[in-house]
Image 1: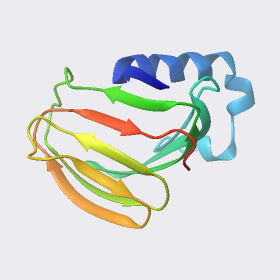
Image 2: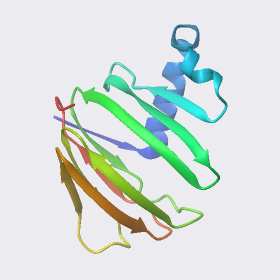
Image 3: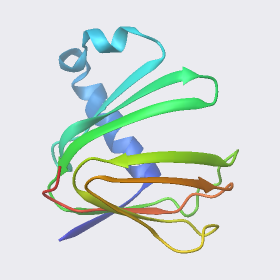
Image 4: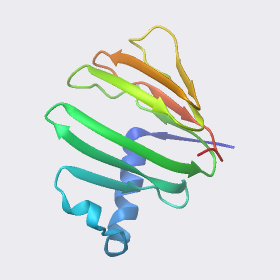
Length: 132
């Protein structure tokens, strides 16, 4: 079974979950204003996405989760304010990204690394269920 969400729907689901359980989610890690911790809602899976602003224009994101169903995040209607460059390391699991402004898909699996740029447009991200 595959779940399809827009990036906006995913953001709303995570915000709603965190709002409902905010007192349980407070950790020492969240005391830094340059750091964020997004818990994955239980109906989507188990885990978190942790972000850290290293400096203006440079962010580090660590994602650790296991999904209940395959997930397709659709962000093709999102217009980015700036182009972005991504350096990605996939330690386990697999995913596929598609961007309208980039030729070909970005397919990554365990122990893969990739560097790519995305000029001003978002795309889709496909994640597999049951994989860390």
